Image (tube, rainbow, N blue to C red):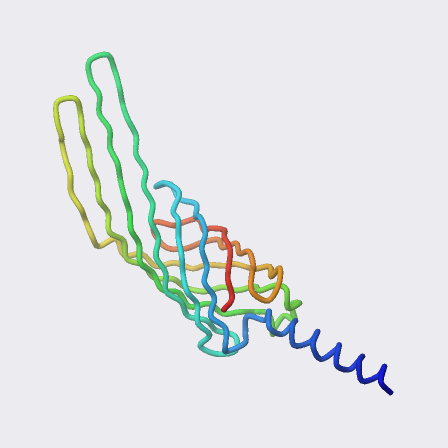
Length: 177
């Protein structure tokens, strides 16, 4: 009898540990950090996700990226630098339950909306040519992504898609609180 109780207790603990990795639990908050892919430099991003329902998350995030280039000849030198700061929101639907995906994995798709602030500086050997900021880089997009959980608190993620500046996606680490 004692062995049966120990077995049942072990199954219960294993089941609750596995369930703790499930993205659809309402009590979990996820913090994502990573690097993106873009034609405007390599964005560094962070976001926080909250469960809105069993299969749907909402989140907010931010990103920073910078890219520059120099042009030099014997008599002329110039350079430019773009710095882009982004703020975004997303809604993601998780297919885990519907597709009966193992709990170590998350598969999701969703929509994003973001707003970007640009700062541009151009200089040459004849002095500064232009320096200015702009806002109004609004972008919307779709994403598809997935996660693999190493344990209850840490996962890696990969996303494809996005909005106007982080157009190709990103990869990083997810921390579950």
